[in-house]
Structures are given as C-alpha cells and as structure tokens.
Length: 163
Image (cartoon, rainbow, N blue to C red; front, side, top):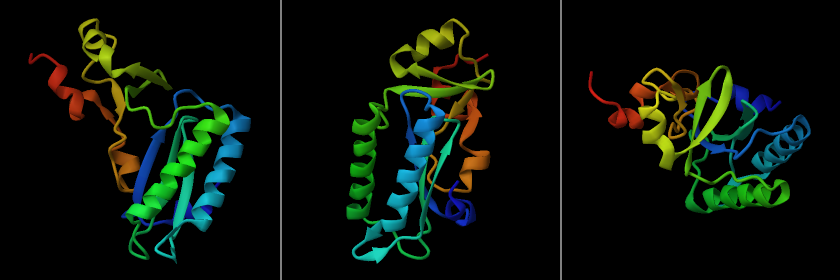
C-alpha cells in the first residue's frame, strides 16, 4: 500500500494504465512495489515529483503526481512510459493497449474490444446503465465519482439508440 498516494490532494494529476488481464496477488504485490519505488525516484528536470502509485481492481495501475509541488513534464511522462513498458516486458501484460474497454459487470472487470462495442450494445450485453471505467479522468479526486460511470454518461453514449 502506498501511503503517499492516499494523502495526495484530489487535484493531483493521474495516469491510469489498464492491464490486459487481472493480476495475480504475487504480481500485484511486485508491481506495486516497483511502482512505488519508481514514484519515489521520479523527477522532472531534476526536481523530485511528489508522486504515488496504486493498483485498483487487480487490473489498473494508477500513477499520481501532486503538480502543486512540481509539475510533470514531457521528459518525466516519458520516464513513466518507459517504466510501464518495462512492466509489460517483465510480466507479459499489455498496459498500453487502448483497443479494449473495461466495464464493471457483476462486481468484476470485463474487457471488451472496442471493435465489438456496437454488437455488445445491440445484443444487450452492454446497456446504458452498464458501468464503464472512464480511464480518461486525469485528477485523483475523479477516481471516486467520475472513473466508474454508467455507459450513458460516457463517450460511448453516442452508440445507444434514442428511446
């Protein structure tokens, strides 16, 4: 558990990385340990970042930076990208694949290819009220109220027929 993540203000910037599969408990512990270590040495233009990491729902790695202290820059974001690529190699997990949407159905994360979205809506597998992970949120405070939302309130609302 990363205590720094928990005390970062709601205005802290976040990046959500969605795993291509659920993590085992062993993987979760190892990846979180590596992510916490990374956030402790993460810097931007030689300035340390006040940052933290958290794994949620055994499938999402979230990095957060308090930009009121020091802002993340292009080079620091590149460092995070390289860190995530290293995790992909080490654990044979994709963290950067944006071709799958994550839904929360029956208390489980369910991944669905974007290419199948219309079919899943047409067959009723995904409805307006199905919960979707809005991985576009960029503030820590949004994790609680705007990250998991009904599909009708997300960008996929355009795929539902008007009633």
